[in-house]
Image: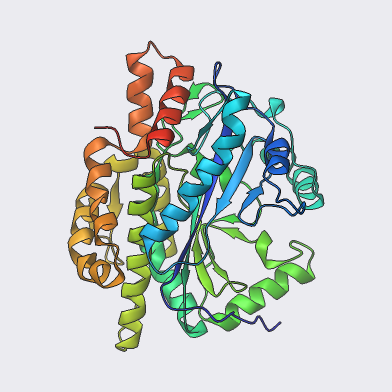
Length: 379
């Protein structure tokens, strides 16, 4: 199977942001995405070009255009938040974004009426119905198809950094899970989700897709739901491992880290240097550590097994990647990673709000809504 990789300008960036709809008074999820999307149709009846539905009717997804800078991509999707809010505010509905809803129950949620979603639920049953998860997806343009797999393999060493920084799902169905990112554990239960297989080259990716299609496991490449995957249609690598984030500040900081990592690796390949990668068992252990402990995780750094606290390595990366960020025009956003480390990741902030309000999870929802409306990290 030959898979054509679209032409894409190097290190351009696009962002997808999944937003949950909640009742302003109770904090419960509300299933009115179809109503919101209908209200967002153009004068000619056409659907909104960038705001779409998702698996469940409690969610809308905001999709940026292709941008050269992180700042413009974030401004794009944050502007779409205002468009959605113009529809939801008069209906008494607020917007939040986190990896999970603190107390929502799967049996109260409605599935979007599309064949692909009904097929997913029919196949995956209880696990599929429990996919009450929200995330951010970041696409970065790759100008040469032969770079895709080496960069993908290299990025696996930085998944714990991204997962810890974005971790925002400490609660699940009203329970404090003990995990910073319970979403990471839930999502990988789907049959084609989780960590990617280690591939050697583009031909290996083509063989994988052919095998999966021939045996009926997938109908098309979009059903490969890896934490990082090639996106041949757009000419990008898509990083899907991050929990949803509730502020534009966090969105920009994490997107900048991703864009800089991809560009740095691309530059290494241009110079004839190999992109470092790790044993898959280290990659899997790192994912679990970041999911469980978040910013308190001690992660494995390289194939020799060296370890470091993830926060210390994030600060090291800021220094290493700052010249790349300056060249890409995202240095202010990259430096905002320090703000996440100082204010705490979302899972830490949510736990603090619950503790300060006698364990109230509606109070956590209210805090998430206020963060999204304010757009910046709490001081």
